[in-house]
Image (tube, rainbow, N blue to C red; front, top):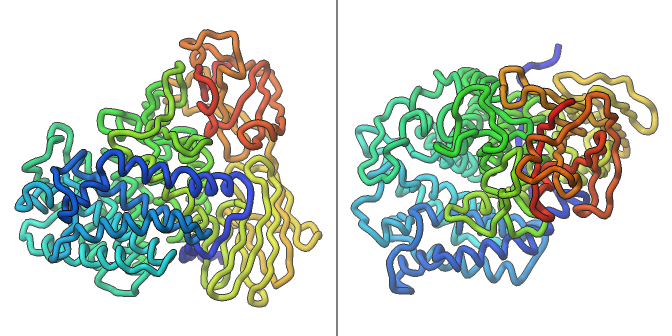
Length: 592
């Protein structure tokens, strides 16, 4: 009988080399453009200067929003990832200077948060809205990434000191503490995995166990009108979770931290709570693109089945959070449905956020436009640019996972895997534009188990091993094969375009149809389909029920994509929209 609970371990991104296709192009763009653009903006907007002022190297007051430090940390983290992938002396020198400015600003007791260092230090750790713990988590993630890439321990050790100062302070409070913006939980588990020190896992558990028991304390917050227990997921204890609430990014970061803990402890009560929330979210609060968080008011959830297209919020960071969470859910039990959600996010909701040029970004990701929605160079709160710059080059960590008996292939990205145990795989594919995936087993233990995901969207496929057709059927969403060094697995997925219809309870999409091919959601842009006025394009673009859907390979478009011809309409991948001239756009098309 198949083991229902098959715990997996993550394979670090640095054990994976992305070698070609869509994601290689995106990683190269981040390395060459996005990292440098984020550094320039952090300098231009005073974020780096805040560290210089805190260290006394520069005169002046704090500039910007209280959580601005996080953008500097995320940019350093991203540079760590791209340096681990390929050396870049210029980028290394840039990052070294940033690390120097950050570390110089740390207080002797380990505290590092420039807003209070340059303001009233007596207010530190008094207001749960002020992102201090969140920023500590970002220091930790950046410190590990930069240490792994360069051997430079300065930022890593600054992160350890910041964690120690934080925990000494917060655990001394008799009334407990919650962090208003989650994220520290994931970082502490990462630190536990990296160091093997139990105290960091215990600290992560402590943060999770506080929620639902501690009264919010917001003495200096500017956002008290909507900063409620539901908004920051403090409304119930973790094991009583039933449904998603509040701010979408905070929610997914919280659930990610809980999933991290559950994947290590194996506590089923935590897993069951997460499964309830997941079922609620996926059934009634998720867009076809994977976007979540309908409302701009709270940057989060509104009501079930309320999924407006033109005014969809769908923050890019929330899609990143969904990838974080579902990747971790997959590690708990090895269920392919969670890797399916990761695929939806990385092929649609996340890639949409970054322009092809690499220096413009979507904060919001609507599913329709009257020509006014555009990526921008930066934002007052630039969490999405600095999340994209660190997520894209870390994609290798989402492709594979490992179990006691072998390796799981979760995402189809042209790459090479080399594990600490000596397993070497080479995956060749031009997915998602083509459905052919070849996996060569270059080295492995004899009879190793190789589990290859069968995507949930795919109904027809062929599978062969060493050129001979295999009748293996997916179990739990995976083809489970026994392989030896020298074996070659070929998986061909039927990529015929298909129509999709919304749940009838989603009134916005009544009488409308969407088109998908493989994991990719398609949309119509006015530039390809002239004749409908821009302001009405999203409402009037129509697809006849009888119209065939045909595929055209377009090596000249967006660096090489597959487009879909749908009746009189030309459809492009949603993640590529708004990279040409302005105009109307629609994912959900009027069906006539």
